Image (tube, rainbow, N blue to C red; front, side):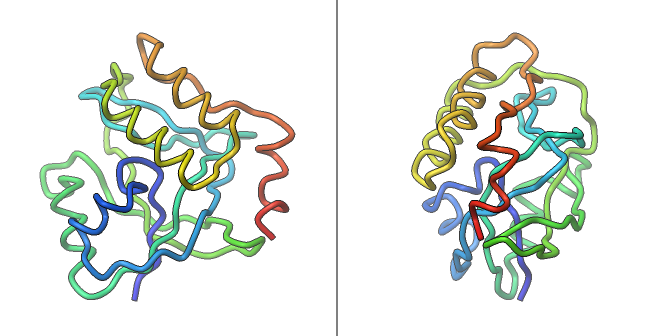
Length: 161
């Protein structure tokens, strides 16, 4: 079994059910010291950012799910790469698989993509200011605006405890 942190399209339950049947939701999680950004091609990624925090969903993946996600994330083509990062779930650190874009040149967000991510963030109960920061990305030309920093985001780790 592999823990996987989704911060973009894979936060959508229906999408994960199609890509990785049998994936089990662990719950909301946080990736501290990062921010969400849009890269060339309109895809999302996370970038290291002191003081930032990315909200996402922690999934437990079964057999074959990593290979399925590798195909979806176009790992072999070089779009994304698999990494391990520490995320926080229920106030505790957990190592998790995460997909990070190989190239980080800023891009223009696709409205439908951002709308799906924002809807998933709302459905998971993420803070309103974080959801608002995702919506704001859709209106920026470069899509690299950092997620909102607030006392609510900064203290989110303790909130999940």
